[in-house]
Image (cartoon, rainbow, N blue to C red):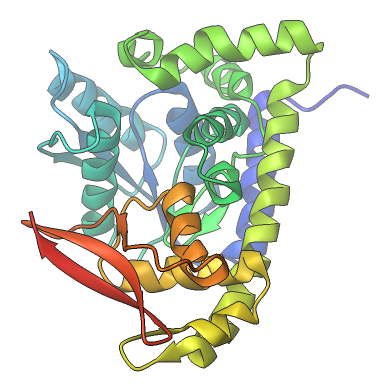
Length: 320
């Protein structure tokens, strides 16, 4: 029996995703860049349910407006009920890749209305995300990858390889836009894609991308369990303006550190690393009268410290 074509396989993946996560959703939006992943996704999405295409123009490359307009035309030709080009201004915080991602997600969130947004991330993107998380050294959470369904964001193609979307475009006679940034070695993800993953596949005998994606799933399941246990434990650990050290000490290490992470985020912490969280954890498990632990924050003109005082973990702000 012949194997189904690329379009049929993408349609099956999207159909299974919709049945599992969006059974009552009558219509949806799709984030369309014009590249092969999002273009193939738009093509199959528009055949399943009424679809709006949201096209973010980052304005980072010459001719970006023309690329966006071309994607707009393709979306309507593919049967989308509407297509919208959204120009954005990209900042500088976190570097060019992170800043573009922040601007893109903010624009999509504003434009989607009540619709879930389909994103064209594939298994290859998931593998790259796991490697990036591994390099950060921030623990299992940073390697848990992207969730298939993280409302309003939907990633129905996380189980298929990137090559399948290119094959689908070819089957449909579509000409996708090939973003030069995706092959620009100035960008870390581009080097992972073009150099690191092919080398790993060669050295380890293939199947690396799939193995990394499976690893992300396993780690995500573990972190979600820890998250649930931490949410149950947090009320019992909360005391006054801080966290009760004695109550924290009764918790298992992973759950205790997740309680600390949630507490730090609620107090203004941002960009927390595993090293920072473990240093705060030692205020509970290895208390020797040490001073406060500086943690990343979103405070302007101030630094944020976690300290231990009177049997509690507390937050202290200091001017820079």
